[in-house]
Image (tube, rainbow, N blue to C red; front, side):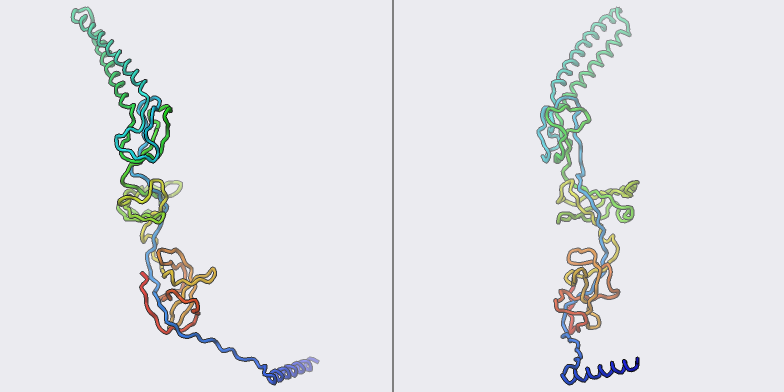
Length: 345
């Protein structure tokens, strides 16, 4: 029974094939489409030292919190946030009535002490006053004069002046507020050199030292800087250490802005290709490589983009010659008739 079924199937298949041949329906062999050789412009991938970038901030090289040296009510503050000030310029004035009263009281004490000292001196010359009484009168007079000098010095503290030229960055008091010695009323950031301050991770300790040249980037601007200070101690919590660099010339940023501190070549070597050689297919990225006069589409894992180059994180080993600005109709396996080399760096 089983052999009969197999023979019937074979006969049916033979009849079907004969019928197809009689009707001209035999399957045709599909020939592969041959692509014409193409001339391309190429560039070899290159190795370059990668940079390391760290978050940083701009700070003024000089900054001071300005406070009064005497107590009293603030009578006026002729400057505000953003104003530029000169060294010695008056930035706040304290009501001087209390100071005037202190001076008048001190002057009265001096006058009384002088009268007492004169009277005791005359009595001592006549033998009617002891040496101890004379010494006491002298001490009282000196104390009164010292008190007057101190009161008069307070008059110089009525006007608060800027310690150096700069810009008012903060104002902590207004006219009518009570001024207390040691309590800041203004913050002034000095004009001139600008610092870049960054907290670097522990693994970057061997990369910077005083005098190391770095670059600063931010908001489409860049400037050169030189490291001026490296704090060798690590913060026990963040495991970071502080680095300060001074920007060369006038900084294009204002204090308080966030920038990037760049250490050139500190990130180790990596391989790069021109960005215009990259071919994208959905989520994939690759390049057309010329291998033995044939185009091969090689997929890559890409990293950073710097200027007009892209970093290769993973890809084929060995020499990689890539096609620049590949046409959309190029295909894998297409023969190459000729190449023109173009410098990428």
